[in-house]
Each structure stands twice: as structure tokens, then as C-alpha cells.
Length: 291
Image (cartoon, rainbow, N blue to C red; front, side):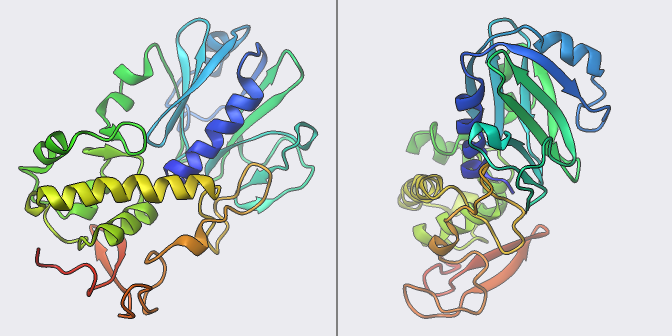
């Protein structure tokens, strides 16, 4: 968490506040973990005076496209996110708690000021996020090592089948490792597998073309709905929208976080198991273990 829909909400914020503007000030925390030992001075030099031409996203990764390279790239980890001050029509979010008019947010790692007076800040309480510089994000690590984007670049059925043909790992684990496709986490992987009628423990190479076609359709469906609803805010409020409101997708979840509750399709209690240290929720009736 955040997953693709939540990261896309940040993309919309960055595009609204930064696109077409020039970066007039850069403040960086001295955090060698989040910046991966990149000196603050080097980061500031790369961004200061640069004009933002656009915002890119692949899976759970974001980057600003500047008029000169390198470009800054962002990954939120578990608790990272971008915020803007309330004066720009956005109420702040800091570490899953509403902070009203406070600026900058707590745990801020990067703060950008633009020539029109607008500001953005990235905060990260647990320091699991990463801020990098890349000359070409799509062709450099870590983005170059990711699979197809789960929303905008799903592979053809033949390509998808080839990617899983020799993978005997559980399909849930394959969806989470960002290899075949990127952008899914626990929530939306569980939801897509449920809609597709696929048990999370099914080996990847056991999926038929029909299974894969249903899965491709389900992935786009659950992500599109979540984006429309502003993402999923769980009870811990670890994720909120940039205006401080909760994402409204929680009520759309069919299996995730619903252990022991009845399946909306058949009434069978939802089960929870652990696959490679990650929880998985599924309906044993709608998602049989045998194909």
C-alpha cells in the first residue's frame, strides 16, 4: 500500500500542481535511505530551474518529465505520498492522519516550490519509499525490471501465457512480484482473482487461456473502479486522498479484508490464508483450487 490506484491519485495531483511550471526551489531531507545515498546537493542541482513537461507512471512508480534530464522518480513504499498545501485547494495528509492546515507535512523528504507559488511535498513516515534520479526511467532500474503496467499496458493473451508458462509459483505471488504485470498489491490482486474465479494458490503455469483472459479483464475492471473511487482507504487510514478525504473504494471490495464474511456471489464464508508471508482472501466456492 499504496497500489496502482492510489499512486495514480498522486499522479493527478502532480500533473495539476507541477505540469507546465518551473521548479524554483528544492528542499531535500538528509536521508540516505530514501534517497539511496544520493547527496541532497546533487538532487537539488538536477531539479532547480527545470520546467515540468509532464508526469509519468508505470505500476507503482511515478516520475516528473523535465525539460532536461535526469528526471526525479518516486516510489512510495508503505507510507509515502505527495501532498500540497491547503491554499492550493488541497488539505494535507500526513502518515494517514488529517493535519488540516499544517505545512509542510510531518516526515517530509522532498519539498518543491514552483514559479507560480505552488508547492508539493513528499512525506514518508516509515522510510520505505525511494526518490531517485534517472536519465530515462523506463529503460533504467527499477522500472525497467518491472512487468507490463497493470492498467495501461497489459500484454496480449499469448504474451501473458508465455510469461507464466514456466512459472509454478502461486498466481497470487506472481501478481505481487511485479514481474508479469506491475501495479498490483494485496488488495487488487485478491479482488481480480476473485472476479476471475481463480484460486490464489493455483500455479501460474496451470492457468488456461480462458483463465488468463478472465484475469486480464478482471485486473482492468478492479483498477478502473478503484481509480474512479479515489483508491481504497482501510480502517487504519494509512492511505488518504491528497485533500484529506478517504478513498471510497472500500465498499467495492468483494473479498479483501472480509475473512469469515459471506461471499456476495454464493454466500460461502470468505477464507484467509498466507502465501509467502502475505495474506490472501478468496471464496473457496467461487475460486476452486482445482482448475
